[in-house]
Image (cartoon, rainbow, N blue to C red; front, side, top):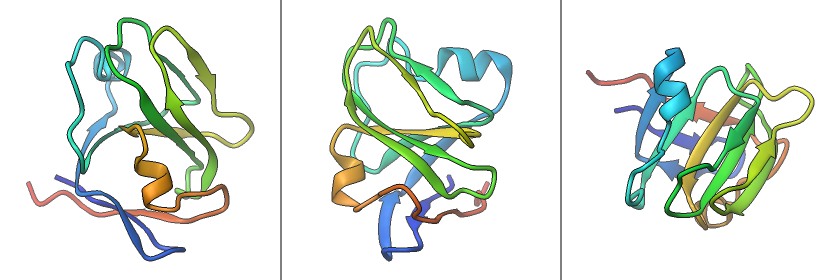
Length: 118
């Protein structure tokens, strides 16, 4: 599975990232899952907004440009909320709540998504 590293800060963001690119996988995302373990994440591409309908746990949402620079960080987004990525948002990285702060992810940072080993 791909990893995500904050190249700007030299921190690990996620070690086990699933990538959702089909219409169906992007729509379902993490809905109805019970949790997201530390180190896990979901990269939704393309994606400029996130809904938390039917979610059971909060997430950090990191919106990225096509070049994987951070546009916006939405910490601790709770169930039944909607978030918009804003200008330049091309994809969204969903992470366990608190992960973005631990990895010091901020707008302007460059994230690197490694190639899958599969």
